[in-house]
Image 1 (cartoon, rainbow, N blue to C red):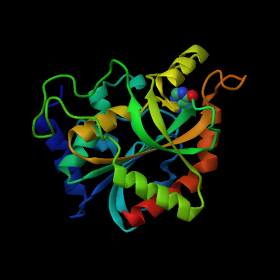
Image 2 (cartoon, protein in one colour):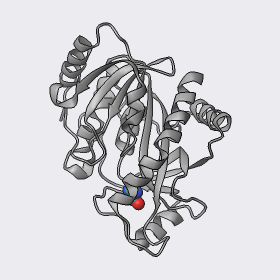
Image 3 (tube, protein in one colour):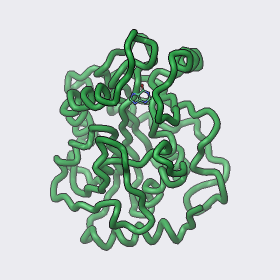
Length: 273
Ligand code: HPA
């Protein structure tokens, strides 16, 4: 269990590296999507390994550092890579950077991920603006003693994804000529991809995309009163939709192919927000 003092220690260290720069937006860039960080102006790089209490990502396509700077004219702190529950970290550890960002003055979370398409109207390469998520059962980053400085014991999750941001990202997509679907993110711990029977069940339950990240960060950010935008890139159709096995190579290849489109969309959003 982390204490408020742990989060403060991490935030103080990061602040000491920022030369007065004050980020307002936290961007979490998922598998293979870290390229957007290269466009940050006046970048300051802080590897997670240098920050007290931080965990380092072991997943492929995750660089493992903060990039702080201006993007689309907005002061951002970008996570180039994140840690996942399936790597063996607790849900609380996975969401740790969100609270640190909150202490740095960040008011909004923009979270991206690679995901499998459950919705039969989707195809690989689609971008999906998240309306909601489903996380059945454990793990949960808020279990344990509540830290009231961040938020209440029983936080509301009726409006996790900000309606205003949802509207803005749709406008950004329209202006850029980028197709943008909307859907519900279904969390599965991984690291194995799901079975076809699981995917059929998730579809019945209302999931449109499935992935192994994002929900812990969103729960923690919503608890702390942050505004959230979530975007999934469909890197593959989920298990059983197409008659072929799923591979990590396919996920990273699709992320690579979509990265410029994804970057344009998020830049346009940041310019509008
Ligand atoms: N399932 C879970 N996570 C994923 C997938 C998938 O099919 N594709 C990319 N991340």
